Image 1: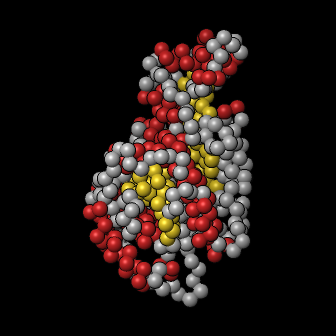
Image 2: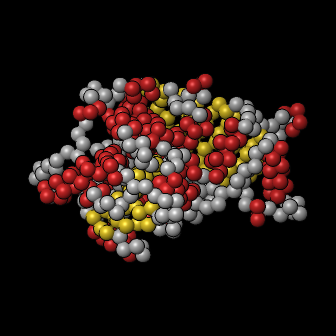
Image 3: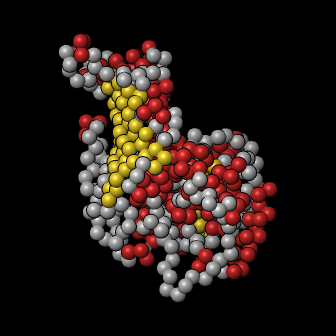
Length: 457
């Protein structure tokens, strides 16, 4: 989003003055009032989120912000709300008609924009990862504690998926026995590609460490968050190996990573992200790229997140009893299938397995809800609802900071080739007092020929 090089001194002073006085102006909503929100960052993903938000009567987009005028114009044309348009995000935050903001900008800008939005009295939805650096973890935690009346939600969508919620219920109820291991991957081919212009092209921001935390923040954080949720704990330490081995195009982030996280009780998460093959060796290899398998002493679940062109999928494998099955492999049973697709008079294999799975889970006291739509819709509806009712997000500040901490420490483990303990975050980034981190620093003119930081997600 907007950088200091794009701010005039007059704009900065106006916005800064508004932000100083704004914290007392936290909006209060009646349950029936639509939430007036602004979207900051209108690249591919920001526009995607806006399209989902535009479906809901609970929200009303009243402002847009991006330094790319064409991106703002395109986004505005898709809306019927005639939103105001800003190139300076602090000017949007100074708009008293805006009660909440959706931040979908490159990672290195997340902290400063979230910080400024909280100071301006706004509710905040910020895309994953919530923060970029260790000092930002401490600073945002301290700041958010002073703004407890404002909703702060992070874009960790798996917590809003009925399938992931169903697996969490299975874990907590003991259906899988004692869960000891989770394996997860997000494999792509070729993954992120370098656009013309290299570092000067804003669309390449994910490929440079100055702006991006690479595969750990953009991909692994989602699965790490799921593991934290399923295990009910955060990791104790991480080890890993990363490499820049296949994309010789000027990037400086790894193009492949392999990580192992150790949780209390010896439980483990193993994670892989590569850019040379998108095969997913689970779910009968019917889906590519990403998924995870949760393994317990009484069974396992293979699980993947739904996207627009492919629904979520989850197969449950009961641990085979060698005496009863003569060692034959367990068959995967779908734990969730829309009720309208189950023909109870049909004796096909799928129907028999689905009915058996449902009856068995019912006997265990588990009545699993169905995935009613895209979890992206669920998370954005939840944000609007929480703003209106003072609710607490499933993916709140601490959930977001835990995922960001994992990304930061995972990169440290790979860079320094050592075991990194999560307790190191207690002192990492706090050599100087947190209060010394500048708030709304005055704009500075860039050096001649200094490229602008990238702005599109």
